[in-house]
Image 1 (cartoon, rainbow, N blue to C red):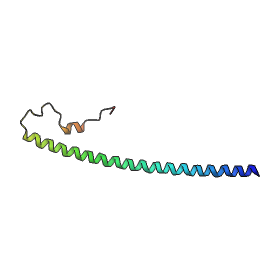
Image 2 (cartoon, rainbow, N blue to C red):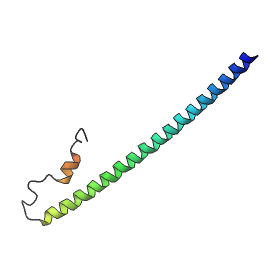
Image 3 (cartoon, helix red, strand yellow):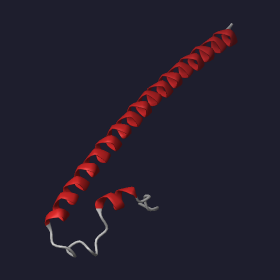
Image 4 (cartoon, rainbow, N blue to C red):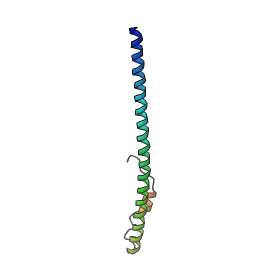
Length: 87
């Protein structure tokens, strides 16, 4: 009988452990989804900010004398460039 009780106890602990693991995995999946959603919102906000900055830059270049920004890349060009690796 002792071995049956021990086996029952081990099965109960194992089932409880599996449920805890499933709960933890589910919680992590929910956090991951929330983070992915937040990243998409941040990307959209960044794209909007870059668009607005580009518009402001275009407006200021139209008012500046020629040659003031000759050595600089425009914000629109910089935003369209692929990201550098390592950062």
